[in-house]
View 1 (tube, rainbow, N blue to C red):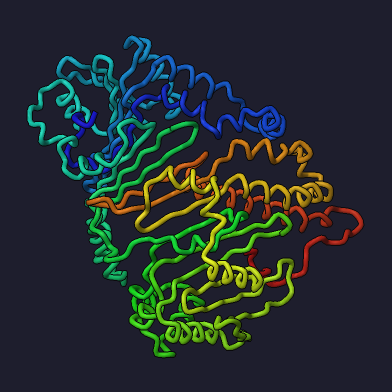
View 2: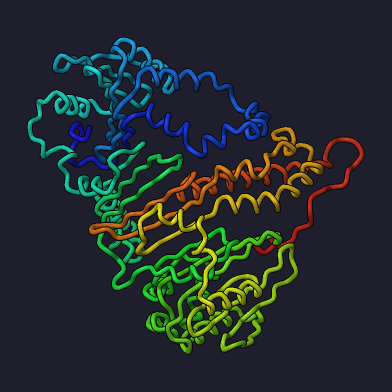
Length: 564
C-alpha cells in the first residue's frame, strides 16, 4: 500500500483489515462489559434517546459485504495553502456491487453533486463529482477503489498502481523516516498512523517569523528535531494495546527512571506515576516565559527574588517526579501526593521556604519530627478539608493535601517496604509493557471504580430524588453493581523508553492511558454542559407568569477549592 503513495507524504492512516479489527473488538474486555445484561438494562433508557441505529447497522453490513482491506487516508501535499489528500481500499465484492455501495455512501455523506463528469485515463474512467467548492475524483482499478480531491494525485496513484512508474525510490515505502518509524510498530495491528512533521514545522516556523512570535528558542529547536511520529493500536487477550513512536535525539543525559517512589505505595494505591522531569533545566526559561498564569509567574518570580537559580534546583533535587493516589475503603475521597528525591537537604530547605513565602497572605506552620521538616497551611473549612503539606527529609520531598497521608508516606519511605510493588496485580500489569527509561504510569481501574461507586452512588441517588428531571435520561436505580463492572477492568499501565533512534511509548489495558485521557476530557465537557443547563433551568424556575416564586439561584460566592 505504501508503494502507491509519494515519498513526500505528510500523513498516513491505515486499517489493514476492517472486519478482523471489528471481530477483535467484539471480544475485547470493554465490549464484554458493554454486553453485560445489567449494563444493557441500565443503558436501555439513555440509548432510546439516541437516533435510530438502522442507518448505522446498514452501513456496517455493507462494510462486511465489501470486506475492505488496506484502507488508507493520506495527506500527500500542503502547497499554496491547498491540501491534497488521497484515500482508498481493496474490496471483495464485484466492481459493480462495490460501486453501488460506495456511491450510496458518498451521497449520504456529501449529498447530491452539483456537477458530474468522467475523464478517461489509461483505460480507466475517473469520475469527478463537484459539491460546491469541493471536487472529488474517484476511480476503480480492478479490486481497488481510490479517491482524491485532486485529479493529478489520482493519475499519479494509478501510474504507481499499474506499474507505469518504475522508480521505487520515489514512493513512501522507500523513505528513510517512514521505514525507521515503521520498524518500531508491531507486525500486525488494527490501525496505525504516520506523520512526517518536517513540512508542518517549516510552515509554523515561517509563520512565527512572520508575526515575530516570542516563542522560546528551545521549543522551536525541539520541534525541528522530530523526524517522524507514528503509532499503532492492536488487541491482545481482550486488552487494547497502543504504541507511539517519536523519532528524535535523546533529551535526557545520564538519567534513568528508578521508580524509587514505588516504595510509598500501599494495597489501596490506585494510581502511580514516575517520570523524569528536569525542572532545574527549565526554570530559567519558565521564569522568563510570557503568557503563563499569574500564580505560576509569582512562583518563579519568588525563586528569582530569593536568589534561587537553576543550578540550585539541580543541586537540591533529583529529576524523577513521582505521584501516588491512595483511596482507603473507609475514606470518602482519595489522597494524592507528589514526590521528588532530595540530593542536598540544605538547598532543598531554602527552595521549600521560598515556596511557602510566595504568597504573603498564606500562613504556613513549620514543625520537625525525626529530622523531617513539615510545612503545612490550614485552609478555610470547605466540603473537602484541604491542608497543603510538604514534608522534607534528607532523602525525599513529599507534597500533598493531607498531613496524615504525608506523614504515613514518610514512614513507608523509612521502612523501604512497598505493598504496591509486592502485589500480584501490579506485578502482572507491569510486565505487560517494556521497562521504562523516562515515564511509567499505573492505574488500578477496578479499585478506582469500586471506590467511586461507594462514594458517588449515594450522592447520585439523592440528587435524582431532588432533581426528578435526571430520571428522564437515566434510571440510577438500575446502576449495575460494582462487581459486575470491575470483573472486566484490568489495570491500565503505560511506559516510555528511548529505543535507539527515538522514544517509544506503550500502553495496555481495557482502554489505554491515552484513551482514558480523551474520555475524561469528553466527560468533563459533557458535565460542564449539563451543569450549565441545570443552572439555567434553576435560575429561571420562578420566572413564569403568575404569582412571584422564590428564585433557587445560589448567592454569588467564590468557587470552592478543587477536590484533590
